[in-house]
Image (cartoon, rainbow over all chains, first blue to last red; front, side):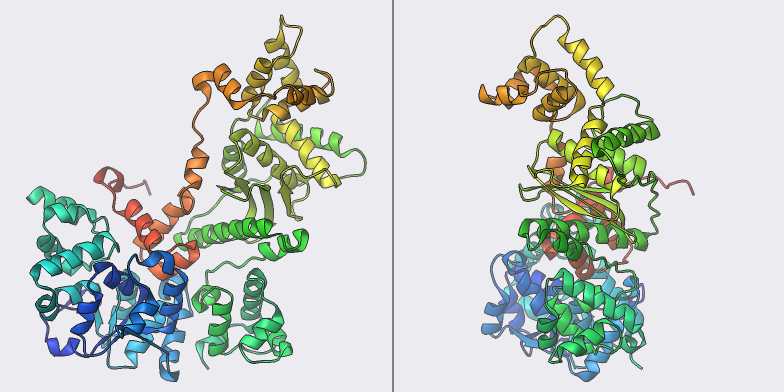
Length: 217
Length: 392
């Protein structure tokens, strides 16, 4: 099932799972959340190939490696075969150029732009946990499949790997340690899965989702 | 023609030159990084040869920047750091401080531009140094500024607020190396900026603000780093120190308060110095030296205090009691960016004007630091989140 929110076509968790088998290219915003979830190894195991990370993202994450994760470094993930660092070809570079040159409101930083550019020229989904990038993808690249860390965590294949409690724990860690962003269509479901007590502790969830859930309970 | 090729080559070249100089990378190193001759790099920076995408990607990486940060329309590019470096040589502490001030000011200006914030400033007329005694000029110019601001003879306990609110100067108070008291810079695109050392006591910061204000008044287009304890080895420095003294401790006001506080006593005690320094919000040393300068106490009085145990913070606490307030600027300096930048950044994020990657780079924050900042500003409790619509 696909829904449209503010121009962005969301790929929902109940979609055809064959699509996810295409693999993902992840932006820094998502890599941080995947690692924070503590479940990156198991999540990657349900994907058909290592998680691709473009060089610009790798460089950014490496430069902030002392703080972006508490448990793993990019090089360790690459060495374990969980991620693969990739470069843009000429066609992807043309998309990249269009995404970094222009007004601030209509451009993205290099890592975000390169991730989208790579996804556009490969058979991969763009794994991004960033609101402006979601908007730009929705407005400019209608055919591009964009997924999120939340979506990966809620995927039945991931749940089969982690178990229901494992999914809740991974979600909670991604939200509390990584301050993961959750797309609006999935907010209610995430809060329901977490439970009101845990949701209230996740400050990256919008206030209405946290407070609202506590009031309802 | 690609988007990059459509950009004015002179503008791109100038931005690349500023980024290279700010990163302290030589032309030879930059040329080598992209596999061209140094003359080709010079041609790129002068806009005579268009830079190619793979070249600007590599250069952005070398300059610790990004293609987007270099090329997006609203990005602000100034050469504060290279200017300071030319003045101070390869002084690491000065480099770090001027780099910090430039990054804060550039982020401020870009965010203001994106959000449509009009920063109003009200700069007093510049008063260039003239021939003759600079100390007399400083006394006159400080009195003129006080008059212009309508301050009369009142003490200025928070000169930073005066500079920000009355003049529209960008003032930042951040932790710097102990050897740096303050910096002043002026650039047409960002206006007048002052950076003060949050690690120094409030009274000393007030004096540093006075010193940097002097540069703003007299040598606006010649930024200069103030080193703690630096000798007055130039007319500008002598002027700046005299201006700060005259601005914060005007002669007539000091004489009046000296008379009020000392009355009935035939000696200048530690208690008198503590109360006077507190009243004018300057350091105890600055207060005594001003009294010496004005002939209200013998020359060498401060040296006498020093030789006899000095005047300690503990003694000041005993005299002033609960009048010693917490230093808010010190607390704010513990945060990764300034409160105002936080607000601007949170609003830019809320409106979807800048992405997480763009904001993290602009504010020089780790992604998690940025997320914490945005969560604090955009996701706190309803009493913080809710508001009323502003009148249109």
